[in-house]
Length: 398
Image (cartoon, rainbow, N blue to C red; front, side, top):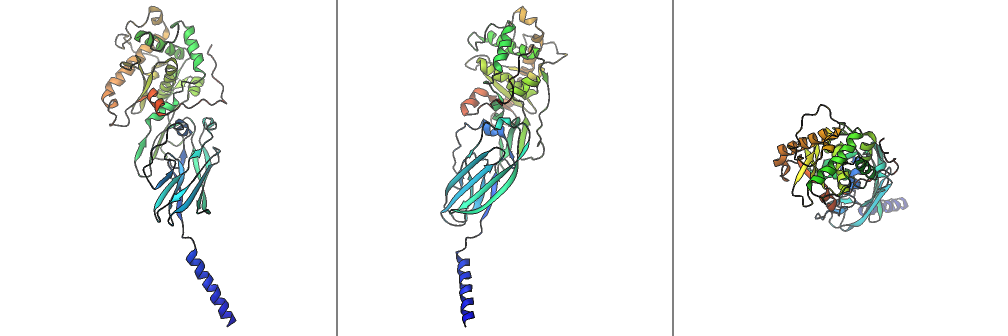
């Protein structure tokens, strides 16, 4: 009898325990850009105000990159999500309430990044991302995933969101324009030493002087021996079709190596033009990019520059009149080695723009054709990727 009583008590306790046990939790870590993180994207967008969140089942940072997906096991569940990224020494936490039972929620904490570390990543590296989920104050689980952190030179151009929609980011190239780079002062000093211009005054003296300032900068790069280099692939190019990226040299890299592909040369030149008060824009067409610049402060007139013509040999005969440069230069400027390549670069850029003008001026059309106005992107919050302060500033060329 005593044994039967003990057995009954034990079975009753087990049954009671089963009735009060927490239901199984269905959850998993979630990554907006898959198993890849791009320091360039994190830096470029760090000053943009967060997007408005209209989804009641999405909690936390509307632009979050790492979070969780879960099915809420009960009504009014208190939730806490912790995220840690070891290689970046970054972490984030979110606490809130999941109101509806059996509803699928997404929770993305605001991650506090070490922004000083991001520009120092110059090659693809793995990192552990640890996500911990707490429900009603109790740990529901911890999971660690390995992600790939890209070089700062890898520009995220687009990715497919969880709902399947393709999100394109042509404006990311504006982050590689760095008008604050300390080496630009040396470039401008070299340009003044040539006596092609006496000063840099932006739009104060009219169109001819704008052309003269642009040419003086072109002449410096030509004298430094800049050459075209077509490297654009990243270590994960073609691996994940949901994510597209392209290698872009920072101002440091282009100046240190005297090499640039079409986008490298365009962002380098745009950086210097922004510094002297001439407003540039990037022209993106399929598999190519070149530079545009406004000839007046009101942005009524423009011209273009094919920066890949820098250092080119066997240049076609180029007419200054055809390029819109007639009368802008004196004989001293026309006698320089750089003049012919400059005229050629303007003509090529103008021809490319004219051929693609209709598509470029149709913002609702093909996403491969875009004009990226740097001043407009700055107002929107896209900031320059700062120079790695552990790298030496390129010295003046002798």
